[in-house]
Length: 230
Image 1: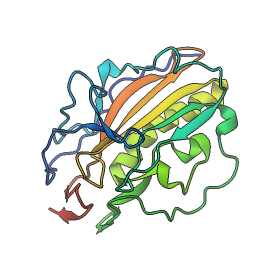
Image 2: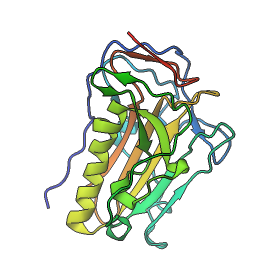
Image 3: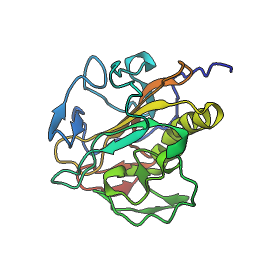
Image 4: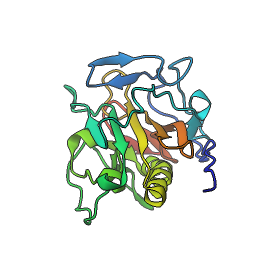
């Protein structure tokens, strides 16, 4: 099988200035505290107005040998929501038998910061799955849904979910997968998500990227979820 070469996915989105320009940190609600050093040499991550998806650690995942073990078969875990109803890190060992064979029902769960707004060409926010429905069938699970901009959800996260899903369907192999939402302080809307994946039986799928939770032409107040059209 031809090797899948994963490079930095560049989505050109300009002209967005967030209300807050603070340094971002990784927040794991299961641990209840900020985790540093997960995004690279520094936790300082600022959207440059152009690149919505950037490479982390030279696009190389950081799973340990233990984390890549198939000893427990296929599984998925979600962090408990924190005191602000925010999601935390989601992890999975993906395989074909976790994939759904039923149609997805409509989403109705409202994640933290859900203050949606109608734009000229659609809604600003999506209820964004951390682990996509096509991978494990999780749907209206508050621990698996965050307030994400339309561009974060599609095409950005979907591009990587499709890579993983298509690989599993074709090979029946396994993929270690992790999605880490990034919040700053008490903000209700994540500044973005870190996606990592590593195929187990071979090295055909391997990526480590950060996707900024931004939308062109919109200023987002990450503290509340409110927004202003520029």
